[in-house]
Amino acid sequence: MAGKSWRRTALREQVLSSIRSGVHPPGAKLPSLRTLGNSFGLSPPTVLDELRDLIADGTLVSVPGTGIFVAEDRLDDRPVFLLVHPSWPDQGELHRLTSVRLGFEETLSELGGATLSIDRDDLAAVVAAQPRPAIAGILSRAPHARAKAVLEELDVPQVRIGPRQSQDQPGPYDQLRRYDTVDLDNHAGGRLAAEHLLRRGCSRIAFLALHADDGQDVGHLRFSEERLLGWLATMTAAGRDPAGLAFHPDRNAPDYEQAVLAAERTAERMVAVRERYDAVIAADDNAVLAFAEAWHRCGLPDADLPAIVGFEDVEAARGYVTSSIIPQWRELGEQAARLLWGRHLGHLSGPPVHRAASMRFVARITAERDWLGGARRRLVRRHPPVGSEHDPAERHSAR
Image 1 (cartoon, one colour):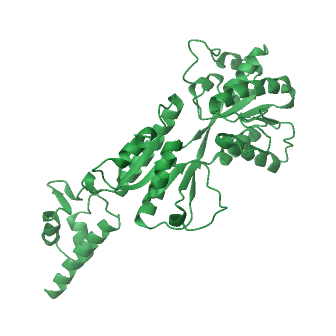
Image 2 (cartoon, rainbow, N blue to C red):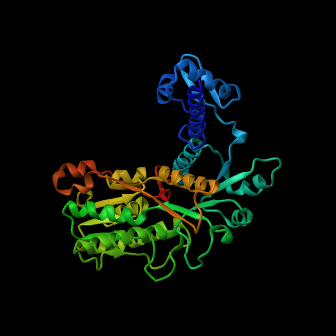
Image 3 (cartoon, helix red, strand yellow):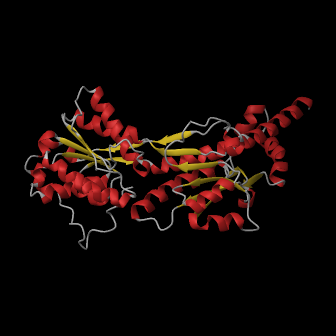
């Protein structure tokens, strides 16, 4: 009997340990009674008898005919994590935020947390509200000055969507109240686009940028700079001379919409020297549209458009059958959730951490320039002119 008592105690401790460690998180089904019993030399009835106390105290839930599960946490017992997002997002931003939110919420729910998504204009009111659950961490995108002031007062782990922080001020994470960052791997995106076109036989690949090449901080257009750097590194490694193939606006625009308008003027200069290149990588799909519209304004036929690779997969740009680099926004939300959870539990400490979400390439037929032949003219569809009744929401929504 003493040996059996020891085995019963070991069974109970293993079940509790698997719950505490997250091997069996809330809602998870335990192995069958027979499987548990075989591990400790106990019969299924003995295993069930040993688990009855855990069922009685609410640690486990028995579902007749189905099995025994780890009890779900009550929501008010879970640590709460906020997702603070911009007000009134456009269609493209809404799509990205939805993907980020789903990755963020699902990951934290699986880990044992709860989430609340709020407008940045409401942050101060939520933080001041009483009573409210304690905030365990915050993910934010594009906080304005008022929201930043609130965030800086909160002594909780934070992650922001954007480029990594400067390392000019090394020191403990908690002491500096700095935040971790998550962003897209834009450098890899530029590399993927260039590698694909090189494999397809293109050798003079141009880049249409949204940022200026004037040595100034590119700010909100950093994604364009990073994608260009990925293109540049790939061209150089392949022994291709990139001189004269990068096209920039004269100066950095103060916001994204004006950057797209500036890209239209850059694209006109680019089309005027179209003999320099046989393929184009655009900083994003709105830059694709700017290039295609400049091409049409010059009276050039669709069939002569070069192979084009864009980013973000904006629907209007698909009218040019461009290949796309697709940012994994959902993965970005998952990365942020795991960073916050690690900080919350103390498993992650030290200086700010940066995580980059991957990019994936989707090939479409413009990158297959030779085999289309005469069918190309029928496949390429012109985007409605700017200002037409079909124009609005898709344009300016790529970033």
